[in-house]
Image (tube, rainbow, N blue to C red; front, side, top):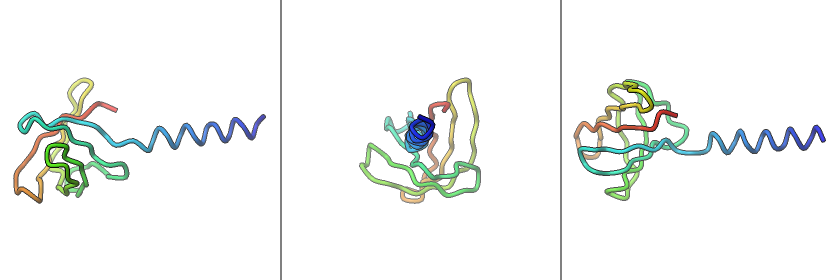
Length: 91
């Protein structure tokens, strides 16, 4: 029984950490996902999926601001050379 509990806990822990962080870019009208494994901190590079272009992109995190149940992440999109503002779910 103890072994079953340990296995179940491990499966649930993996499932909880294996999801991307979902958000929306209101300026472009596009959903985005910041892939699992990215450390989203100012000055760090992240990989994100842009549903509008259908591509993975790389960007530099410029700033992070929490507003209630959401988080604004400002990213410099290296592919387009533009600054983008993602509103992410609050996790």
